[in-house]
Amino acid sequence: MSNYAWLCDYTNYSVANTYGMAMQTEEFDGVERFWLYEKEKIGQISNEEQQILDNIRIPYLKFFDAWQNRELIKHLPIKLFKEPDINYSNLPQKEEIFFRITGGYLVMNEKLYNIISQFNLGKTHFSQVYIYDIQNKEQLSDVPYYFINIAETFEFLNSNHSKGIKASRYTPEESLRYIWGVEDDNIVLLEQVKNIKIDLWHDKNLHDSLFFSDRLVQALFDAGFNQKQLGLTRCVIK
Image (tube, rainbow, N blue to C red; front, top):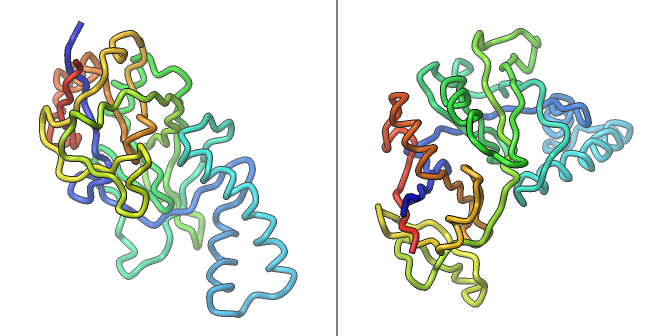
């Protein structure tokens, strides 16, 4: 079995772009939330509209917390809506492997999804989404994207023997670490990682971390992806 795993630093701005997008799920309407929130920000929201917004916030915040905590989410987005901005054509390019949207959520292109979905993901799952115009509801993307719910978490980080990570200056006594200029072989993972069959997971002790098994990464390399594109850093298991 391999002595390596890989950290995907998808939160790095040089690896993945971030786009302003609202989500629609079976439990909340992100489009209505967006427009009502815009009214609230400028103090032009009616009492009735404020009540509607408050009611939407309940399931939205539940969704947000579950995604941040890497918990299983039953109802994933069914549509994404591009929020208006200075450059309204600011949309993901077809060659973009993955990107983030408002709230920090991760979305992948079809090629990457087709490889990853063949591996053992445990509870982690995806929903297929297209991108729409938030104003006229017209479809903007002719290709599908895949919203990921990372729902497998472990504690394999050996922070005492790792480099390129740091504790929060506000809570240095806590076990949580943050990625900080990590390079190949800086991160050390415990031997127990070899006992799992999961190929994609989050480590509770490394903020916003996403780990791939070596077998998954080798398949991605074979499919034509490279380390820089995926924001990958090799980690040592020992």
